[in-house]
Image (tube, rainbow, N blue to C red):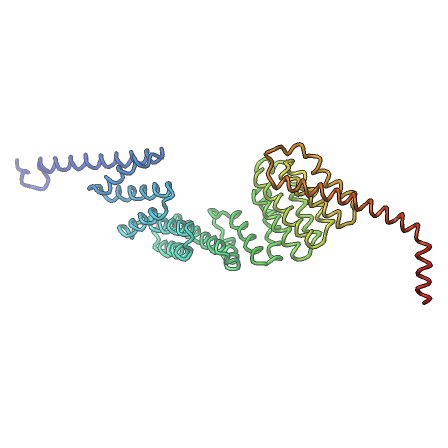
Length: 391
């Protein structure tokens, strides 16, 4: 009893209140954990009331903060980006000095960029770097990674806006960083893209060749070869462009197994775009080489018919009608495969190939007749010519 009036003794009321508070906090904790399980199972509508109860109740801030972030993640999972931004803004308003503020600013920037609001995206990325300057020793590495990612996202945003020169400079600066957390492959790849888009063809060639050496197994190899071939061609270095095209079209089978869809896409794009450019420029020999290599990539009629037709046109321009007719014949010979549900474009190509093949045969007959007639009238033509000269 001698201690009854001192602060060393907790009254029964205080004990009851403390026990009730502990029970209340435990209930909030269960709500938070239940919400997380439901969100992981994508049961969003069932998860939301748990987080709302935590936020509207008397839960401590260290529970309310994750509850609000979980609501933001649900909105993002549902692709409700404006709602996501609203929740993240609310979070920063309530807890502006929270250690996770830089990461939330970064998330806002990514969402604004996805919405096409580039100016606000850039402001959020710069704000990420500014807010991360208030470094706490135990979070130094975390903030350093955030700053580096913000710099990378600034470069990406410049590239998305087609500000290629500025993007190239930003990517070049990033490549000077020694941080092991930097995705150097991605940055280098985007650097090559930006240089090519900015018309810096010589620089694009140098960086592209370096990329191919540093990352021989990268899925991006195919596009980089495409950019190299395009840059060589724009510098009128056609032989080097052709070598890059052939390397792409003959890419190793192991790479094709690992990234078949990417490889096929860039093989087809490289061949189509550059072969068609060569054709338009009158370089029919190189165009035919590429078209014929492309035939091996895909046996479907949708892929092969346009190629055979372009090969036929190219041989006509090269004054080789027999080879041109053979190319058109490769289309006509597959008429039975068309069926009744064939796309109109295939039927049109079939009709055009048949017509050109018939035209070449008619032209050959006319030429043959003309040669025969020419041999018969040659003496008379000579007499007429001499008379004309005499007069």
